[in-house]
Image 1 (cartoon, one colour):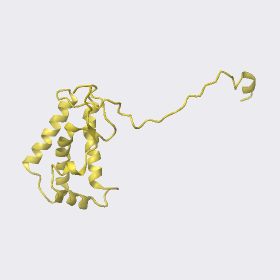
Image 2 (cartoon, one colour; image 1 turned 180 degrees about the vertical axis):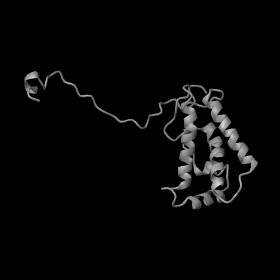
Image 3 (tube, rainbow, N blue to C red; image 1 turned 135 degrees about the vertical axis):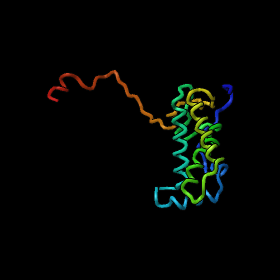
Image 4 (cartoon, helix red, strand yellow; image 1 turned 60 degrees about the horizontal axis):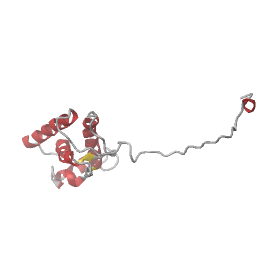
Length: 153
């Protein structure tokens, strides 16, 4: 990727997941998990999946990480293949050999990324960008405290 191109790192979405499993399976998972966790179970699953993949990415010091929760575009589909297996484990439907293979292939790809055997687009900005806290530096040449004023403290 040239310096003039912008790397696309984004948060995985339910629409991305629907490329790996059906809408019926997504809704079945949402129903099965309702009440077990706070918030939307699909959103939680997407977050856990992205965090899992980011663990592999962090282990590769050549990759400049994107904002928290984001993945490079090239790893969105493999992440969805990885978590689709978890969805189907929870709903009354068997995981097919195709899904097992897709999950295994996704993990193999993540390991290759971790060991620099597969290049992904770096984000070009530090991981903590967007999570920064600003502060102001105040300085003065006038001493406000002297040894005498601090006496007794």
